[in-house]
Image 1 (cartoon, rainbow, N blue to C red):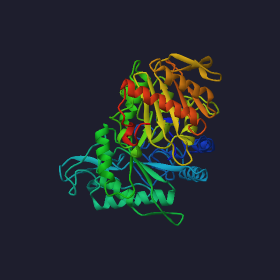
Image 2: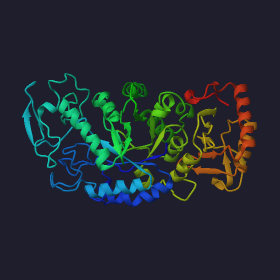
Image 3: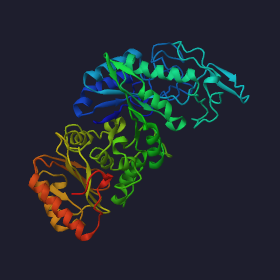
Image 4: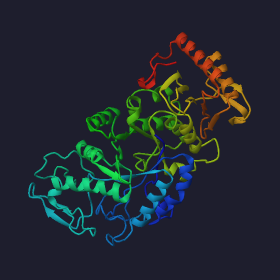
Length: 482
């Protein structure tokens, strides 16, 4: 499915010195991103926000149809730039075969023009949106909870008024907005913000609505932010995708927490990484996997701080739709384009090799060996992840002074086969970890190393049967272990 780039992070225009110029800044990166193998850009909310406590990231919408062309709320442009600059970014992305995903915020609004008394409960709220200069999707008290149309509000976001999607006017305007973003502005899909706050039916309606692009029917991509447990996310996916001819994905938050433990908790057992309680374990084709995003900041939800390439090695070799964070790729300099030791090399491995079902070949506290079986023109791979170091073989051209580091728990026969395979393979990507631990990832193509590849599988199968360390069922349940 490709690799998504989250093309922003919190306060990025200020941090990067690109206030009102972010669209232009991203546009400059598009050729390099396309060359690296990215297939989609997820942009921040593009509509005009009220800028109440300073310039806004857009997650508190005021005028949905002002993308930076009307002088209101203190500025003509949004914090990211003008409408014209956004359109130019989208056009250039499409010329490089990159799709562009809009961040759509339909749970709540902010920055109303006046307060109103809600006659249902008698409370006064900021709910009159009568002056958006676009003149579109004007709102008043009955567009927000509580209303006559619905007694239950699934979730509130701070003290901002929640839109009532059951109001036929609101429902119709949201569908019109989605159609405008796809057909007129040129977006290719939606990232749905805070879906815990409203019913799945409105997302299903947006996804199934008829769109056209370039005179042809078009179905937008959709991915949801449901910051919940694996069970809650999977139940949500089942509900939204039931009888839905254009299904929606969801970000795998439970996996992200496991990845943080992998990177930041010394002594973390790899047995806890590869198992249930993640979305991609049960629904790999509905999971968008990620390492960090704009919401992980501060003390309550900190970013991953150590050995982050370990986390990227997992999401870019396993099933799921991987999403790379702009701040990691550029600000923290983890791309390392042109070297075998960064996210760019992992993306290359993903695009060249990572296909087919996933089988666990070996798993203990300190060593994980996985196989992707390949599909069509992608030959598959073996992924080796260490959580400790133990030298069992050496070879030229590898990190750490030519030493191949493999867990001492791996039996001698299998260790020897793996060592020979790594030394002899003609298509290899070795990604050296940095930080507190030495942990290496190898991507081994079956196509160019068939004999040694099969010998390793035999050794691992025999040893697993002897030691009874791993059940025979494959990871994710998609295939039988080889």
